[in-house]
Image: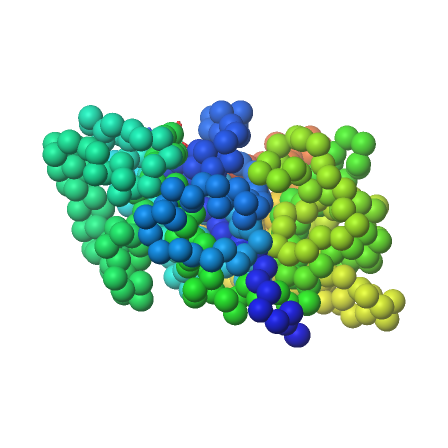
Length: 458
Ligand code: GDP
Ligand code: MG
């Protein structure tokens, strides 16, 4: 692919970590809005992408620039993707293409490493994704005196000796627990060797302290070490994150455009539940800058959009589009057939890429990525799987699962992750004795199933 000389696109950064560490709140704080407060239970169940134009980042890092080395801002902005736990991160793996260039791993200073922290680290290591740790909730240190939006070293210098001692103790606990997992981490201001040590930036999503450091770190890291990854390439890389019905627009797809350009009227080919979908882009929409894609707001319409960006596409025939799959553009009519073939293979390989057991449960998921994540989980939990599919649970799925009634009754079960159950299907399942478990969080599903298995086997 030919590179536009020297030009860098906006890097894509994923924010991940254990539940309640403050991922959404951190983004809210950077955005100066309140998504977290509007969410049911505060847990993010949807994927959100926020584009931060470089001007807003400059604004927030200004204080730091006086004190530290002058970094030249070359990237046009930063696209940050919030994830509900790790499931969506797996979903965002974007199947081969590198959707995320880097990540922020959020750790609660008071809790240290938690279950999903480890899970996230495993995923990051698997994909060799560079990351920085946000050691969040420093304001919870007893006696902490906040200096809103201050760089960390500035606010730290103002704390009393007692508070400093308390902070150091907590900080040391975290360093030790990371060391036990085989990771060298240290505070970012003391990191002299970024090849050996992962930087940890102390932050507070409530007071904004340390956020200038975090943003500055992300900018410096991408511009220094990820130049090749974010050089503007003409080739298109785009991934469907979500399929949504929007009043007045019909079915739309939310897409992360990692590379290249999308234009109004482009012929797109995406993976559909019942085969490839080929359609024309009717409208290319983005939320206002510094607003999140999943929050209702005024959309801006574009003739064309340059990577990286979270984009909503309105087009006909998107009803059965599969979230988690790549989106292609056919520039010439002759390309359509080839691309259709490509997306079909993609879905097939995702659906066949597991060990099919003679006796096992059926699993069903909302997206290709979440299906993969679910299958990986079930594999590690040693739950055999006999069939998979994507999309809502219908009668035919119940019939398929019912085959197990004869073989091994407890496997006449459908595990549905983030999917709807058709009422007819539920009725049939009840009649036949097929169990359907659904959940919006993968480990809840595996928990439910292992409890059920234990009950049955007792
Ligand atoms: P997520 O699950 O990682 O997205 O976490 P949330 O952003 O939903 O935050 C979980 C809870 O922790 C909320 O009640 C937040 O208000 C709180 N919280 C997040 N960050 C901070 C912080 O820096 N300091 C304090 N004191 N509370 C925080
Ligand atoms: Mg959240």
